[in-house]
Image (cartoon, rainbow, N blue to C red; front, side, top):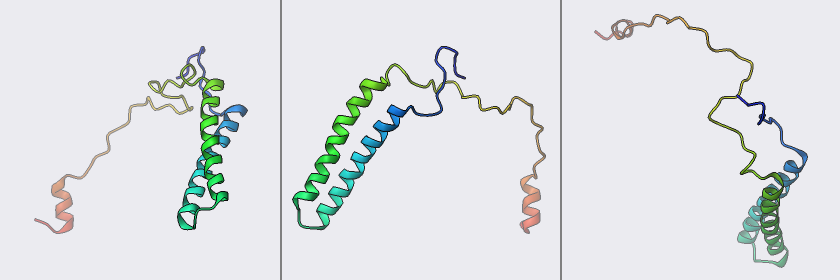
Length: 109
């Protein structure tokens, strides 16, 4: 469960979304640029696409780290998140068929 001093956030902030789009877009540009340049003769446009993708990743990742400081603000995965369902009830054991009964129904003796 989340402690009162460090509550669990279920949504990203606007700045985190922006960095996710920048870095994700950079990854997409790198993949598209690499695939297109491998399938055609290498052109300056495709190389620029590839390098703009690399630049978005290289600039976006440190900027995200400076703004969000993930080493200070992280979720504690050792404690489960309370989602409103109680599972502390003792469940009854359901009777199961023995292997002999299963084999008898299948015709194996």
